[in-house]
Amino acid sequence: MNCPRLKNWLDERYDRKEITKLAKSKLVPEHRHDLWYYTGGITLFLFILQFLTGMLLAFYYVPHVNFAYESIIEIVTKLNMGWFFRSFHHWGAQICIVFLFIHLFGTLLLKAYRKPRELLWVSGFILLGISIFFGLSGYLLLWDERAFAAVRVATGGAGAFPIVGGFIKAFLRGSIDVTGDTLLRFYAFHVAILPIITLALIGLHILLVQFHGMSVPLSLEKRKLRQVPFFPNVFYKDLMIWLVVLGGVVTLAVLLPPEIGVKADPLVPPPANIKPEWYFLFLMQTLEFFPGTILGMNGETIAILCVSAGILFFVLIPFIDRKSARGEKSTLFTWIGVFYLLYFLTMTLVGFLS
Image (cartoon, rainbow, N blue to C red; front, side, top):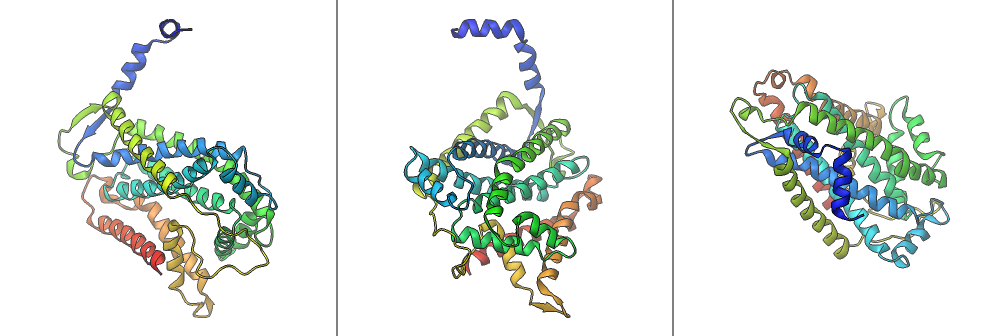
């Protein structure tokens, strides 16, 4: 079937003019802060790339404690272009989480969370949490000593929660300690459970964006802004930015392929100065500020509760910031947003350099 025949076949069944009209009916406000709109599209694009490269790697990965590490070695050394797809998947995950944080803090500082977009904020924050869990679960699949030690610390920290901590720790590990059961459980999370939840949340997030439209900063809300159609104006810009991002990820994948450490041995002590992935560094540094005991109570438990309270407040900002909900300037919550951003950047940098 050649192209003209295919075009006629489609025209007989679908009204392309109506589809084009529907695509052009979505308008996007044009202003000096509209660059932030593209961070969400970049994140979506990187999610798609992660799904595609992850499916390729899943064909050859063996989720068993005796073969997981070896299967990674075989993917990198024996599979045609396997080293590239493994490196691309690694860097795609890193850059995706970077843009998720950029998108989140951009939404926070521009107060794009205000009424009626509260559910957009909550769904986006849940997507960030799931993405971090994606990183943690995929990290363990390497089954090297660094990943093993990091997951042991992370799941052990989850066990510090009062009342439910023991259940969370046992649920994540599937055993008393990090074992082959943990590997199999994390593999199930990484390739089945988390992708299904992610697809549902992305669908909900995009649907809410279509329903509410693009948010405009408070300082520009009362001005008459130029509206441009999403298709083709904004869509083509999205495509160009995606190509640049794709080029960046490919460059990193080729020039800086991730190393594979020594195979994990549960009976060997973890290596000295081991660090988690960069997006956990702020949490690690925060926990180090707390002593072992505080007023006779476990310091780690208090630290976990403080961090949880800070995260909960962060999630509830759209419901607490009443001024922004009424379309008024909210200086207090602007400074709160700046504090969260500076704290995250500072603790991450300190954790990286320490």
